[in-house]
Image 1 (cartoon, rainbow, N blue to C red):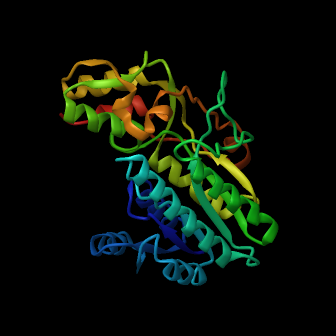
Image 2: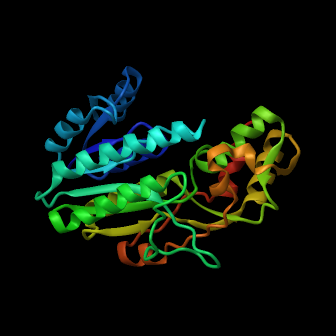
Length: 293
């Protein structure tokens, strides 16, 4: 397939591009800067200059493609207003891409997060939240899945709280960044809340499988670690950086405080059985050993 991808030069997107190219697909990559365009070209993709706000560019990219994968997001968590703006920008982009694919029967793979379900690990059958600080992302993804009734082979790959590679990425990466700046490897509350995780290279395989095989309107879980306790994550970070490990106020995490504090293990049993997906790369606590002081 000729695949149009947004976010193709990020930690996850670069892995997806390599996975697609390695399995016989060609890639058109949205690139919002010269540096991103160069990175896409060096990876073997054809860059298309523009960002998520350039809706005409998105339409043109979708028109040239046999399928679309969406990964881009303005990861600005500096304030509730900045986060809301990022969610709104993504929502408009998804709606534009979805409408461009209506009636084509082409695949459209979007990403979302694994949901949290009290008392158990969430599954692919559980709905994603439509409220809270990132609830707008959930509503946008549900809108894309609903396009299955309008001739779009839409599917969603739900990503866990940490998608990692060489010790970087995801919520664990946020904890690492805060630890570097503050000199304390912190965790909210008592740290017993669990976060699911997956290696970026394993997640990339699932995006390809969804593109190639997912039925319209389906959701899949890119989960390897069902749930690591946050205090265990913080302990590895603290040891690698040589800083103390302790509980810190939830306000430390700004707009993400509620999400950071929640227990949110997640299962990928159905995904593994239905799509034959099997993670092969290091799990989170082992991968965090790559953090350098």
